[in-house]
Length: 122
Length: 488
Image (cartoon, rainbow over all chains, first blue to last red):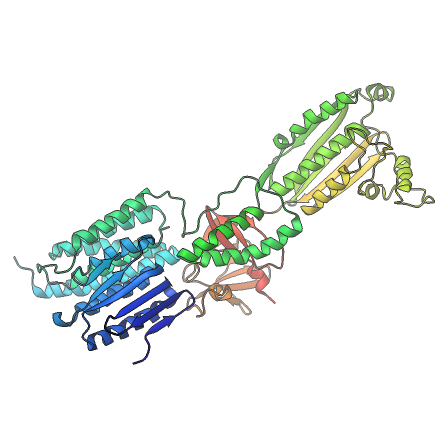
């Protein structure tokens, strides 16, 4: 399978699809990369469902900024997961950085969409 | 009574459409301060709130109500909000879209409605407590206290650099903008135009100095200041101040005679030094005159020969005396006194006036005094302008008010996509051109909205052929683009 990644001037996304799947987001996610991010998430979702994954770590410890458009991509991701049959659904474990203020509030708000699908770990 | 399923489905469809329109309108409000979009946004939400209540979607009604509260606070701030608010609005719209899809009366499952509402309340509380001075995420300019003066040539070079620095800083987001902020602020504060007033109040301090000097020399002098207040720059005030200081001291020291000499010539014992100032044709015209003995051409000639400025066979210096006395180091005194004679005053005065684009001339009449003329072109610091908020540009774009809007551009109009021009967008705008004319030039600026009439104040104005300046509109730093210089 091809590599799922984004490498932009201010933003990088990298995936690992092994026994402990992970999506790592680094830098600043804004309008410049929103389409790429949406495409990556959609492709990643398909591969995770095919692999029967139950959990994926989303490492945002080095994600300095994410604008509303990119955050909507994460909200849409939850929508995709919610549309699955219950036995196919997987959880998103966010690994966060307390020194980046926006992460705490935004992820807590995101978790309100699906408390059963979002786990926020400090 | 149960609500017919057909009505519920109809509500779901209409609600999703309303939410999509609100999302689009919100983006337009943020990017272009579109007032029509703001009105539509509030109206759609209000309607959705009412419909959701009627159709039994109490959770949608609750979130709608909270979002209305948030947008009301944002409206009170002219929609000058940061990313947190943008995120909260978007999340609220997505949350409602999710609730609209949920079956009425069913369990919320993993949806945490109270938690979400609490987050919105926190955002409202934070926004309500913020001061109202921020605009577009760009820190408003507060004129700094007087910093170090830098030479005009260096200021000119730095101002060219500053335009690009402003565009990069104002276009950056979040962490990048935070990194660029100190650089931009330092550069801006170093070279920004600082407004000043030149008037009687500012020059009155020289009265005491003139009279004190006169007393030291055994003379009697009155300094009459008749200067209308005029808006200028701090550099201009400094140049005028230095000119008045040196020319008044020169007049007291060299020009005004001792009282007994004056009365012997039929003059009042007390000499008069008069400063007048008028403004005409955007030029400040100041004269500093005295009723003293005037400039002695013989003394000037003799000292000029001593300094090697003229040849001994040059008998007349009437045409060149000003150039001679303004020469660095020139003095008619054989010995420097405590007051003057070191030959530094007039040279510094002329340099100071030249640095602000002005000129220094003089006329003299033997036995009747000297009149110094200072002329300085007044920059148009505050002016009428048109303000655009354009997509892909995070700061206002300003068009000088000299450009007049027209409907019929005729042939040869220069169509401008400002975002592309500034390298802020790779795709050409699909918006229609708004036409303007100035002299024989016609431009069309691609914009979906007409501009707003504003008053702008120059902040950083590099000399031509610079393509832009940084100006202030209310408290917002904006980019004035010299579209006329786009013509080739």
